[in-house]
Image (cartoon, rainbow, N blue to C red; front, side):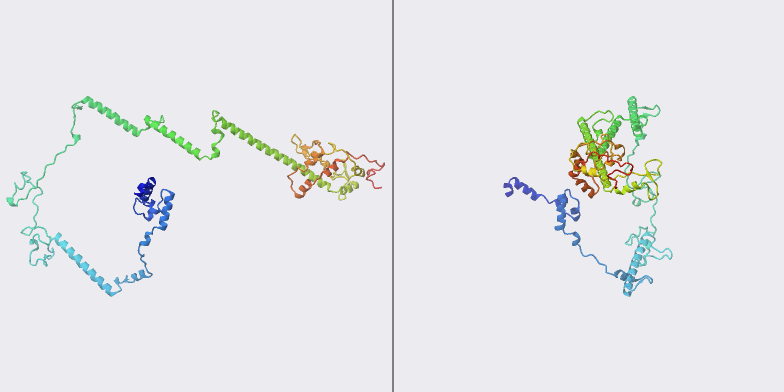
Length: 507
């Protein structure tokens, strides 16, 4: 009644209370076993409930069994020592006596049972000494005249011989009369005839002919039966041919049009299935390839919007690759420029005086070969790349203010034609003619501001000290280089002296 008054919520509660738990639902309402609880359930929740019930509420059936029979150590050896295998007897005399009495009792019982069976199934007397085997049961009586008694012997005649059968038939074979009518014994002792009902004779159907075997025609309705036989023969031949020859190897088709149609449908379905399975196994990156959106044979566009988008993506990718090579080229040019500047600075750190003495001497002190620039000289003197020391005139011109021009300051510029050689450098003017190969062209002259901004723009530098030296180049040093005059005026030459000018001649 409270559930009925509760409405829908009450009915739901009643249904939940009436429904059996999941473990009873799986086992069909009966008590679950350990195997049913451990069997895989339909849902993960039912498996968790079965696992909880197995671990918390179910007692393992192995705990309800009795203690397992223990076999103490040495019991088997002890049982083996009870019987002596050499003497074939028990070591205990009481056990041996009891066993012999039991064997003797069983032996006598088996012999008595065999003797009884022999008396029943064979002669009741001994065929050797003709003594009666039933003397103990019937003393003084002829065993052949005992009749059908309790001993189980067969029926015998009063003369002591068994009754032999006179015939194996129940009638007289001469008169065909029954023995109770025609027999040589008196009527009371004649054998009784067993009544037998006559069976209906069954004639095989194949022996009954409905046609004349001479004229080979049916007895009635010959034409219709012949037409029916012809139709049946055609159908039977068609059936046999369709079973043995279903496929025509010449035309490569089935003889039955319906079977041919079914085979085509099955082959098409198989091809579609294999194609779909192949497409399902492809990675997602292969499903958007270009050939999926147009015919590779007819070049007909199936999806023009997708083709346009793919072409746009290819152009953007090419632009990204082009920008990469441009950036790498610019970085390489900066590296080449920095290497040339570093090499020039290294040369400038070498004092030019170390090369002046061999020049004044005119020959090599090691091999005593003279120096010169002519072909007939023995050894050529190579010019050094060190920065020459300033003459007094040049040092005097350094403090004069001069306006920087485009010719005073020069920097390295990449030739538009793609050459990578070093063109010019204000810090290494002597490297302008010995730069790299085909890149020796006239440098593009720019202002001092561009020259000062070109050196800090180097980023890819190998050593820490060289990088700090390139970054610490101040604008004052560049201004000092820019204030340098175009060229020093020629010094007066001392007549008759070929060593040098008056500025470099030390009296």
